[in-house]
Amino acid sequence: MKNNFKQGRVGLSMVELMITIGVMAIVVSAGFVNLRNFQGKKALSNEADSIVAVLRRAQQNAVGQENASAWGVKFFNQVSGGDYYQVFYGASYAAGTAESIKYLSLGLKFTSPTSGNSTEILFVKGTGLTNVVTVVIAESKDLSNTKTVSVNALGLAKRDD
Image (tube, rainbow, N blue to C red):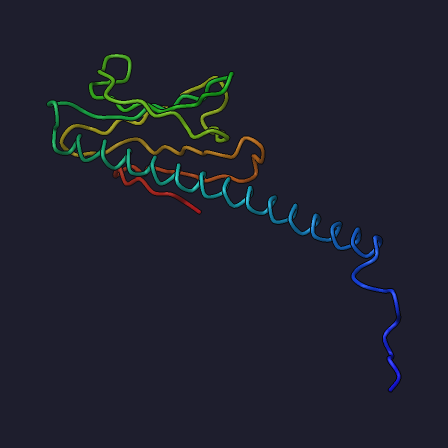
């Protein structure tokens, strides 16, 4: 019987190996880019949910007249980064008592309020009513990827997608 296999050829050639490694590198790098985008969107979504929870708790404290006072949240957009929001109770942020502070997660920033400005949401003692306010957070590297948190006149905080 005759052997149909070529003698001396075993395995892959160097060119075939390099092409395979190149294709794998492209697929892996695309996967990493997609993973980073997913992580950024998830962090943004989680931060919006946290802000809604903080606003709802502040409103509940105002309705329940905790510390016999109105409650509020003030959002700070720092020019140098490190945006944060602070829960307070009292007639206003300036005249009130700070209760807690929360910095935005790394890679996130406020786009509303604008850079160097702040926005205050005050829930009226006993009723929880407030002014209509919108806060927008975004990824630092992709400002088109945003989440909007809004509070209506009845004090209802919600995240718009």
